[in-house]
Every structure is written in C-alpha cells, then in structure tokens.
Amino acid sequence: MEPTLISLLPFLITFQLLFVGLFLISHKKGNRRNNILLSTIFILMAWNMGDLTLQMNGVVVKWDFLQHIDDGFFLLYGPILYLYVRCVIFKDFKLSRASLLHLIPYLLLTISLFSFRTLTPGTGDEIIKSDLPWQFYSISAFMYAHFFVYLGLTYTSLWKYRKIIKNKYSQIDQINLDWLSFSLNTFGLVAFISLIHNFIALTKNEYVFMATLVLLLIFIFYFVNKVILKALRQPEIFAGIAQNETDKYMGSNLTPGQVEEYKKRLLALIRTEKPFLNPQVNLAELAEKLSVSTKHLSQVINQSFNKSFFDFINAYRIQEVQQILKDSMDDKLTVLEAMYEAGFNSKSSFNTAFKKETGQTPTEFRKNM
Image (cartoon, rainbow, N blue to C red):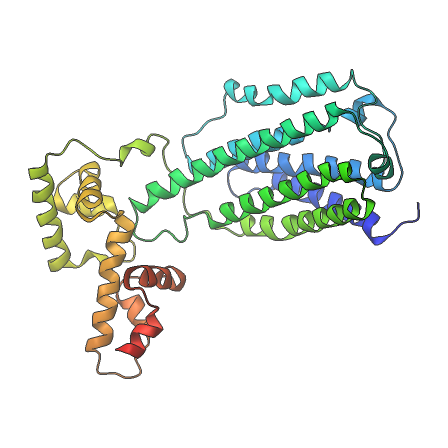
C-alpha cells in the first residue's frame, strides 16, 4: 500500500498522543496523581492509534498478545476518565484498591479474546469486505455502552461540583472547570463517531467506512491539539471541594421563623454594607458577618429567594450596574467600567448574568435607557 495523507495521519496522531502522555508524566506542575491518570488515557489512545496505523498500511501483527491486548482499551477510557474527574473536583478523593474493580470488564474481555483468535480480521479492507461474526458487534455494543455509562457518571460528578460552588462563591469563572466540560464533550463526540465507524461495516459501503474513519481521525487530531492545551493552560488556583460537601449545602433544620429572621438580617447587611461589591465575596464570609453557619445561610438563600448564592449576589450586582448607568452624568462611562465597579470581574459571566436577570443585554439596556 502506497503511503498517503490518510494513512500517515494516524502515525502523526500516534506520535502526538504518545508525546502528550509522556509530557504529562514528567510534568512537574499540578497534581502528579491527576497527571498520571490523564497521561494513561493518552498513552492507551496512542497504542490504539498505532495499531490502526499498522492496519491502514496493511501490516498485521501475528503475535496474539500484541494483537488483542489493546482491543479492550475502550473499556478503560471511561473508568480512568471518571476517576480523573473525581480526583480533579474532590480534593479529598483518594485512589484505593477498590478503584481496581473498574478494571474487571477489561480483564475479562481481554482474557476471552484470546479464545477467539479469528474474531476480527487484520486490515481495514478485510473488515469492510468480510462478514464479521456476531460476537464482534455484541462486544462492540457492550464496550460503547460501558463507556457512555461512565461518561454519564462523570458528567453527574461535574454537575454536582458546579452546583456546590454556585452555593459558595460569587465568582466561579476560574473554578467552573469549563475546560473539563469541553474535554468531556469532545471525548464523547469522538466516541460517538467511533461508534458509527465501527458499525458502518454492516452496510458494506467502503466509501462511508473510509469517510467516517477520516472524520474520526480529524476529531482525534483536534482533541489532542485543542483540548489538552486548554487543560494545561489552566492556572493552579483551586484545590477542589470536599466530597461531603455534596450534602453539606443542601438544606438544614431551620424553622420558618428562623428562616425569616435570617432573611431580614441578610437583606439589612446587603443594604448597609453592599458586600456584593467585593468581587471575591463568598458564602462563608457573609455567614461570619451574620454570625450564622454557612449551612443555615445557604438554606435561607435557597428557600427565600429560590436562587443559589452565585445568582443571589449577581442579581444585586446587576441592580448596581443599572443604577450606576442611570445616575452617571458622564456620557463616556462604559458598561465595562460599571461592571467592574459593581463587583464583576468577568465580562462573559456578567453578560450571561445580565441577560438572565433582565432579559436583555447590557448594550440593549443602555440604549433603551
């Protein structure tokens, strides 16, 4: 087979994946445990991509061990990704022997594959031209279902994390882990395209088979060059939250009378001191000023205003921005200047919050005013 751009692209991606994996292992910044977990994903992907490179160039490895050891790697991506995200968002999360239980499906599949020596053909041409056994599609369906279940669990962990920080902090742009969400979305998209490509052989359409393969390679190339750079550029400014905080800020045992009393004290504090003008104000700081627990203050805000702490504080900041723009005698005062004066420190979060609270953009509000 003559070398072509399509056949050389997997080789380039393999090199990039391996380079990123080795870089993460030797990277001194950040959490070493987290870096090792992430590097493991990239090294496994590099192995899979290297195998694909050999197949696309007509090379079939005859050694059973090397031929089948990576067939079940897809059963490792989901668990490792899940554990990695848990390690990132929970500062007290620890890997234990119980974590090894996530490897059982991969080990069972790998052992069983050695008894099906002719389960899959060696090259791409053989795959599209041959009738693959039903076991191939059954195992593939299980592998993809396994991955997407873990991806769902990972999304759930990230969703809980974001819910907690919105009840604790008034500024979350730097700790919202948008890069992690973006990475999960891209990883899920790559897996979905891989799923289509894997089952497209049933159609016997070589053109569609190659088209999905090229699309898969492009997205993996994008994943390596875009997503990982986003992750590595994140500053190490937040150590994560504790696992027990999942329930810590979800209510308390206050009576309705106590809730009303704390609500009055909170509103009085907001009017007199305007703590929302401080960009870094958080739930613990307000609770200390009011001499109440963070648990009780969280309940008061959630029940009395039906808002998270994040939305509660930003609502007052938006009111402050509106008032500043209305009272200003300076025609040159910009919305951005009013935003910073009111306690915001991020233009994107300000625009989102303003639109959510008022139903119009800051620019539209300025024009209508």
